[in-house]
Image (tube, rainbow, N blue to C red; front, side, top):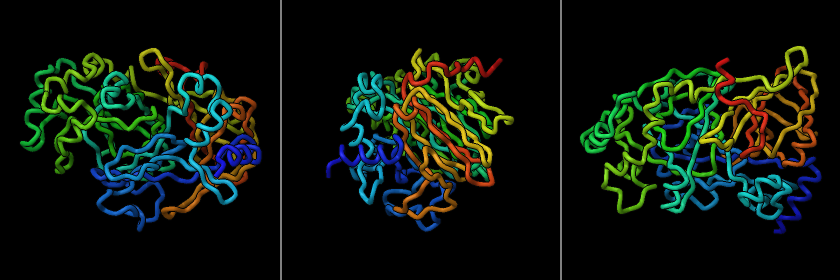
Length: 406
């Protein structure tokens, strides 16, 4: 297969846009929340030994770090004229023509992705390593963000609250003691943390090394292109968490060193007395209004240690309206409501998806097309709503977190 030729033809015919197939990812240690529109018979399509499918990844050139997974698990596939090729291969062939000159020069890849994360209950209190820590095990660090789309949260499932960080005044010794009690049942780490009620249409920005135990809302998660993590909670909803999920992304010689594992946390970031003010995201209008027939909102913004690593917007286009919007970089798009067109390509929100079935709800837009302006048209009788996420430093005009507090 000549991937470069196919990719060029697909972009020419698609107005700078790739059509992407759904990318499903299971997790063996979690229970699916069943809101990502998979057919009820297909949540265990990969077998119960692999776990239930509770994630759908968007615009991904990152492989999932799952035990027993095939090498392409987590990778997005472009579909064109009956052929399929990975977005990762297309980017490797065409580079800056897809992701933009700045991103290609610095990263030589598409370094971010997003996902729907959908579970019946909460998951363990965990953190994602930073670049320095992840490099020790041949990976990259992982900052991430959350947005809770109303269209996919008709129910909140078992626990729509998220524990984040540690209570001010918590000591390292207390957390070490929690790890010492790993095999005694619940190690009590949530006693040292605070839960926040999750609100639809809002989000959070989570830096590396900060503990968080995501709740049971379906979450749209723009994040860095890594699958590195470490879980610090030994039991969730009566289910034991293997200690291997605490240690898997630390050097082997440190797996039994609980002090080292606690020192790996960003202590100041975890015990921040103003944690919510530093991480909570309310949507901010970027352009448009009800009068204009469309509204484009920032839903993920802000910087992590001074760097804009990813951002995201939610676009709502009213019935019968056509609008052209320019953006600062390439992006992945997922439609969450309605029908319409994007640069002439059909968009349709599915009600139910069979595993392996093609859909018309997801695309990837090149940097060139985004900069020239993408045409969105609502052809249905309800709002056309889509979520799109961008790569590093693509949106210099994006607000800082403090802007949402004014």
